[in-house]
Image (cartoon, rainbow, N blue to C red):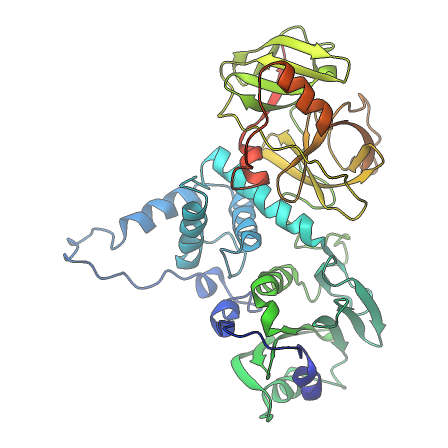
Length: 471
């Protein structure tokens, strides 16, 4: 195993690479660790004045903690998961609040111009950003047949897959990034022997962090031009784990993938664990977890003050549409399948730039649709002029974006009685109103194409999404 670590990640060394491997990966889902151990609040920051007795040392931290902990656990975990994918959070996704979560929320807020990721619309925008990054990576969480563990794999980067005698190997096309799962019976390897091999002195390897617990171990290291992350856990079935190696120059892209893989890893899943494993991420990559309000007729996008764009089919049997508690009124419709609503209570508008280039089969797309929990972001694929996505009823009018947030089209129609498999609506091929038709329709109603795409990508668009309901 020592030779495996030393050979991983070799490649041309980039000048000026920041050597922050231990700091980035130190808190990554150390097996069996508690939320307090991984996301513990840091010591109070000294200030010019001494705090009065009984007063919180950091009022901003305490206020954020109260707001965060008031959310349901699933929402807290979803926020942390999205912050991993946005590149702001490098700790365990536990739903617990600590200094790392606080700093991640602040970093995201500062980068997005002050948007609060804990209020409903800000949270929906953050989840959409996370889902877009996850979809762009084609991150798939599943049980690995080679080792029996649940593992998350960024399949866009690691497109080469090879079966191993006791696991699976995924590699990038250029061989500069490798992920391997491994499983050993206890008579072959133990945590002690694996830990000794991973930490043994080697001429070309520097161990940057090591942790040994009775049931788990984690070791990170650097070679001449590479990095490695090793994790194993022990259980009744033996020892299972994974090894992640990559070139130093790729750290800005790969570091967050290592964190995502570590958070998704379940060494000994319960027998009932499905293909998404116990580490399913919200919004779900392969199918949404929530079903929209049955009264919801469709989705709409606020494209101008008081103006909501949707699919005309949404209004076919909906003479009295409403957006939230406020009524809306149809202003116009055209044969392309689009409609424009007058909606005084609509949120702040966003007019996303239309994608000009044709969409290819390899392009990552994202469909945004309303749900009772806010906005569901669902990965999608283009097939001819249609889109294939695992959307739920009430998704007609849902915008479909590319990974940069450019508008590809709107879902033109959703079946009134969708097919279900075990209660879940599987991916379906849905007609799409293309971006060029949307641009023409909006231009005819004096809503101009933006001069530049606003920062924030899909997250900004998600904040302008509304559910259209019928009385």
